[in-house]
Length: 262
Image: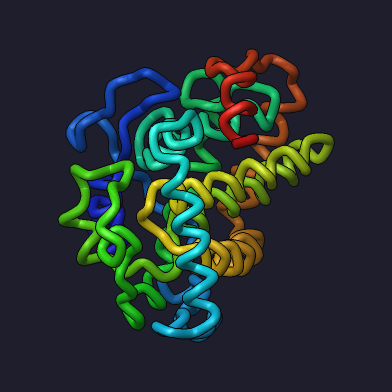
């Protein structure tokens, strides 16, 4: 089941605007298993409240945040959001490189990359219960405005908007990396938060989707710490960072910072 769900998410991989690398095909990149069994994942359907309903103050807040995101269409922040849409590729974890202060990837930091890639599966799967329960329509389905991954609209229309899996992944990554590099905890958690907010800019998630994705991420990271396999890989990543053989980020960090400031 994990493999099938992850393959579905592979269809959401966005164009590598920042990394400027071609996306791999399913034949060239294998999605690894996560650390947790299905039964050990947080129950997102029980954890988070129901999404805002039409006509409510909460939905009005979501609508306003969506309009603010649409105003960034065509900007550098939109381009970064498009890059952040990329998941399940050899360079997806690179999104946190600038915040970490070193390049994260299968070649530059393999142990750290392995940790984040495996945790990503659990973080993504942890949102599925609530997604299936509520089947909330996505913003572009309601407002008719463009989104940053139009090629994936058919899949997105069938996948519930609430909560955001991308937000759970980004925020979870930020929490994990903050533990590994505590001196840069502020930068890492902020970048993980922005990774999720990219989905609002992309017009594929509501603000409340993104906020509740962070709640699910926090519960999932807590669960991960109880897994021996996660602890083993966490220590391997810690040792890799302590060895001091890391290289500078490959992406333009000044460009990223400017985009995030918009």
